[in-house]
Image 1 (cartoon, rainbow, N blue to C red):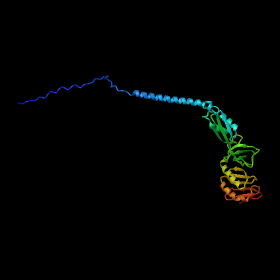
Image 2: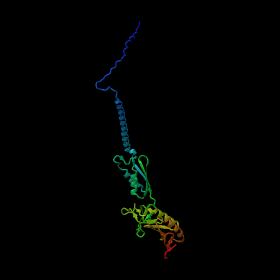
Image 3: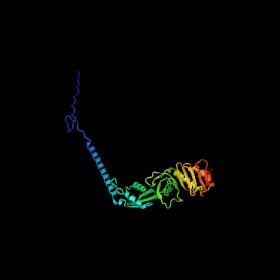
Image 4: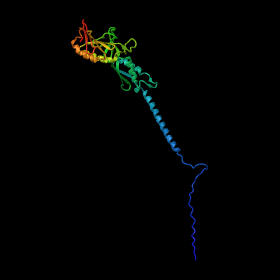
Length: 304
């Protein structure tokens, strides 16, 4: 007898519990996603506030700066000057400090002293001043010190023959900067130079330069060398590329500019044999290589 065992029917599965959520679905629209826009807005607000604060601080700083610049406690009230032309220097500086910078800041403010203008104006009006030192002394006083130019020689005209007796102080670079009183010029202490000048404005040679200015330093050293050899040189005439040196007795010593070293060597071997300060020698010519020509008073020139 066949027995069939039928499988037991499975019990139906228990339904999966579903929690209900409130979900809103709009037809034709994407599901709502949380936006970051509020965060961006907050950052922009912070940045904007920071910029405003910075600008406000800058504006306050500028206002305080202008306020302090105009305070009398920080503006030059007195000027002290020492050195050449002290009183004139004080007046020049006072005039220069008048007014404002671009109609905004006072020129006499302790923080905006126009040192360049003060110095330039002083040097223009007084060419005999070599340097100007400017510094603040306290909060309301300006201190100015001027230094005179060093006189290297006096310029007395273009040539010895056309000299009118008026001489002017000049420095080693050939700048003519001050007249010399006729009562003391020429003197044996001051070397007199006769040469053409350049850059003269008006009737006065002041501020002009000697035409051979670049050669003057070497010429001055050569003159000192001649003096050390016993030649009492008191004047020199510069012409073209040559120079004529004159002793107090009138003896002329001629050499070529730019060849000072060679001429000094020749002079060192010749001068001990000559008397250059008593008028016994008319001239000594050092223009030729290895030779010196001289002429005694009343004699014919001869090489040495």
